[in-house]
Length: 385
Image (cartoon, rainbow, N blue to C red; front, side, top):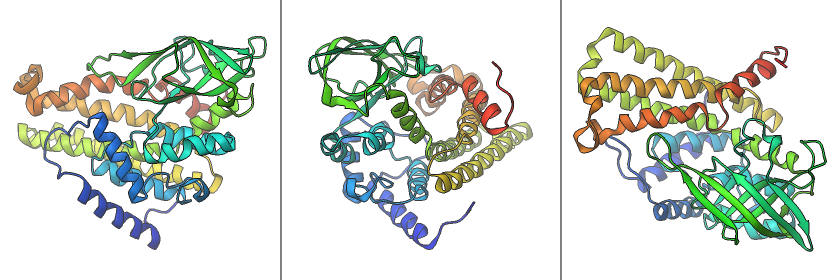
């Protein structure tokens, strides 16, 4: 495991930091800015033009063919600079690699260039009301017809579905097969008749996630990704890429949040309280542990080509640490934590973060499932069932 950059990686990092400094407004000691949908698309086009989209994609598919270490550097520096995600982050990090691996020449020609440029935004249609952690239990049906399929069902917790042009959809094509078999992945046009997207409002008031209702949606056969009945394999490939360098992104974002927490402590006079100082120190230790775990997972991924189960540790511990940061911030605000809007510290930033952070234990893999993965695949403990 390397803790420093190679000469080429150091040059890449320096160039990226300079480019981010030119493109982004100077940060202020307050809440981060919000980005509109149009601004996100414009940012995505700028990333593509500068060569920072598809860093690890094969060069013959429009990428730069770099190792995961370069994607990790991008993830770390862009998070520290408080840059927004690429609008097509799901397509770029998950769907695109799956299309590279399983797609037909036509699917690659249609989707890959537009994912890279940000013209096409993908969402993911895997989870259902009764099939989240147990993904193989999906009930969305795809019935075979002449020249294609008709799809009926429901998907939930789909990020970016309200903006998406297409969806990587997992549906059951053979109800008589074993549950891990008989599944098929589709590249669904989100503007097809019968597709309805509804926002799922969280405690914070955000609508980051969506419900997708599918009623008699006709989809042509050429939109099948991979072989019919092999959807489970495609889904696993997609989810493996989701882990990738995501832990490094989360760690860098936590570093930014911890910096905001320190500024809040100073503004509220809590920086002289030994109990507050001790709690912030504990969070800093956790942050460094997460950081080095991310580097260790990255080293393993560069050896094997796939993210290992260690990435589950990152997501699990990050969820806990991020929730502790916002909880401590509200305690620092004291009675001011009850204020809202423009009357509150930083316009209610920490109140919003506290409510939003509750979803951290669910999104991207529930903490219960992650503990099971760590127990069985990292520690080698026997299965609980």
